[in-house]
Image: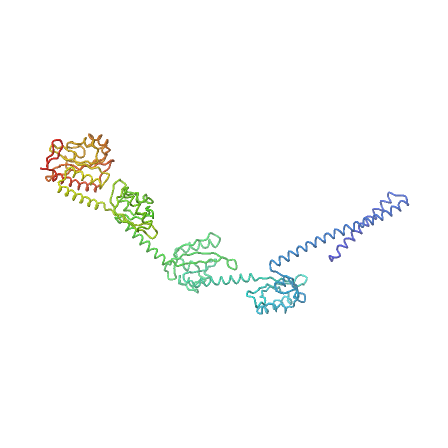
Length: 622
C-alpha cells in the first residue's frame, strides 16, 4: 500500500469502528433501561449529538498525533540531510544521479569547479571537463555503467591548464534495486599526492640501496628465500642476483656450524617471537672466505600480509682487522709498560692519578688500584708535595706545558726515595709522564759531596767534633727519619758520644762510656764484634735490656750500628742510626750508612791530633 493512503485509511477505520461500537452499545443500553417512547426519542437525539461530538474529538486527536509524527520525521530527515551535507563537505564528496543525463549535487558541482548552471550535464560535457588523457577511460567506464549496469569506479584529473597541482576525482556509480543510476564524486587529490610522494620516497630509497656500495640489503620471504638482492650484496658476498634469488639465507652466507641456530632464531621471529637484535657477526662469501658484518634486520608485511625479512649488512672486515692489530699493539704496549722499571703515571688536570703501571707498586709500596683517584702530591714529602701542586696549577693555567725535577717520594713504609718526575700536558688537558727512581744515584752524589766536604774540612784543620756533627747532619738530611750518632772507642775499650746533634742529652749521658762488649746495646756489640748490629725493635731486643728504659724514654724504638775501623782493622768507633718507631733498614740504607761510617773513620784517623782523655776523649789511632 502506498504511504500517502495509509493515514486516511487508518483514520476512517478508527471512525467506523467507533461508530459501530457506539451505536450498538447505546441502543442496547437504552432498550434495557428506558421504556417510555417519548423519553427514548429524546435520548436518541442526545445520543446522536454525543456521537458527533465524540467522533469529532477522535478525528482531531488522531489527526493531531499524525501531524506531530510527520513533523518529527521531517525534523529528523532535515537533521540527517544537514549531517550528510556536512559529511560530504568534510570528505570532499558529492553525489549525482543519471536521468537522461547527469544531475549533480551542489557539492559535486563545487568539486567539478562548475556553477549551478551546470547542475545537469551530458556525458560529453563531463568528458570535456576532464583532462584529455583521462577521457577515453572515463567514457568507456560510464558507457559500461549505462548500458551493462557495471559498477563504475575510476579516477580522473580535471582539465586545469593553468594550475600547478592537478585535481584528482574518484567517480563511482551503480544501479540500485529500483533501476536508478546513482553515484558519488570525491576529491582524492591529497591521496594521489601522498601516493606519488610515497612512490618517489620508495624510489629514492631503492636507488640508495642499489647505489650505496657498502650497504648490502637482502630481502627474504617467510621461508628465508631471497626475494631481494642489491648490487652491494653481490659485491660483499660474491653471489650475483640470478645466483641468489630463491636460495635460502643460511645456505648462502651463514657458516655451516651456525646454520641451524640462525635458521631457528629467524623462524622463531617470523612466527611472532622476539626479534634478533643488531649485532656484529661473521658470515661467509661465495668462495668460503669469512667476512665480518654489522647486521641489522627488520620485519615487514607484503601486499598479501605475508612477513618479509630484510637484512642490512655493513662490511666491517677491515675494521675488525684494524681492531685486532690495535688490540695486539695495545697488548704489546701494555706488556712493555708493565715491564718498565720506571713508573708510568697519568693524572687528570688537577693531578689526581688515573693510570699506574706495576712499577709504581715496586717503587712506592702502594697498591696500584688503591692509589688511583688520589693526588700524586699526596705521595710526596710535604714540601715537595706543595711544590708539585703549585707546578700542576701553573700547567692548568697555561703558564707552562710540563714539569721535570727531583722530588722525594714517601713510600708506604715511611722511607723517602728520591725520584725524577716528568709530566707533560696532553690534548685532553690530562697529564702523562713517569717517575724514575734515582735514589741510589742521588745518594751516591750526596756521599761524594760529603766526602769532598770532609776532605775540605780536614784540609782546613776544623775541629773533629764539628766534622763528625757535619757527617751526622748530612746523613740525616738524606733520610729525615734517621737520628744519627758517632761514638769513639778509647784505650779502655769504652765508647763515648762524639757527635749526636739530634739525640736527647739525657740519653747521650746514659750511654756515654758504655763498654765495647757482647750484647751491650747495638753500638757496644758492633764495636766488640766489628760487624753490623740491627735491633729493629728495642722493646724486645736482648742487647738492650740495660738501656731499654732510657731509649724508650727518649722516644727511640729501633737502632742499628756500624763499626768503623783503622788501617789495622781494629774498631775505633761506631755510627749509630736511631728511629722513632720499630723498623728494619733497607739494603740501600745500610750501603749509605756504610759510606758515611767510612768517612767518620777517615775523619777520626786524620783529624785527631791529641790522644783521648781518660774520661772519654779521643785517642790517636797510633
